[in-house]
Image (cartoon, rainbow, N blue to C red; front, side, top):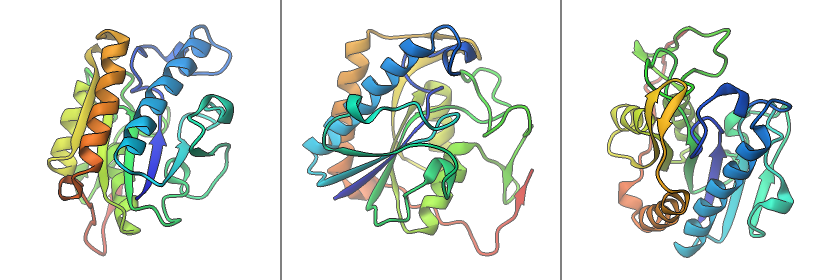
Amino acid sequence: MRVYLSVDLEGISGIVHSSQTQPGEPGYQRAIELMHADTNAVIQGALAAGARSILVNDAHWDMRNLCTELLHPQATLITGWQKPFSMMSGVNEGSDVAVFVGYHAAAGSARGVLSHTYRSQVFLEVKLNGRTAGETLLNAALAGWFGVPVALITGDDALCKEAQEGLGPVATVEVKKAVSRYAAVCQPHQQVLDALVGQTTETLKQPGSWQLIVPPRPSTLTI
């Protein structure tokens, strides 16, 4: 089983403010430590489920946040900008299944922590075939174009609800409960990491639960 991970930062456990998500800002270095911890927990779960290769794509900001020396040694990392398919770079290179780590709710979500769609300064709303779509649905649709289903999505509770409404009964891990765009209730960190390991292992052992999103052709993207 070849597992593909697209890793964002806003939906990582413990992240609640934009100053934690931008290089050079207060809290960024701690945020990166949390990003590695969540990602490595998912990698650990994937290996326990029998993954024979794991490709990790850094999907946040300038996409140079994750470090090879801090990732699990059995994971391969795509880092840097620019790259084909951006947040989904590498998904077309023979992956069997995708996992979205640290994702966030779409632009317009009043409560989702740091909710936006790609660039908050540019996109007020994005719709796929008339339906509001955040990065989760859009990236899942791109994965589906290449025949890659999505098995698991991690983020706050607003993101988890959005994912299940947009993709169907996809497995999720709620790493925090959104209070507002800049506040969340965070569970004990080790408890979250254990949940990430456990749910990843369980879900990847159940291919029938994976969600393959293939929009109709042609489709309409409205920005």
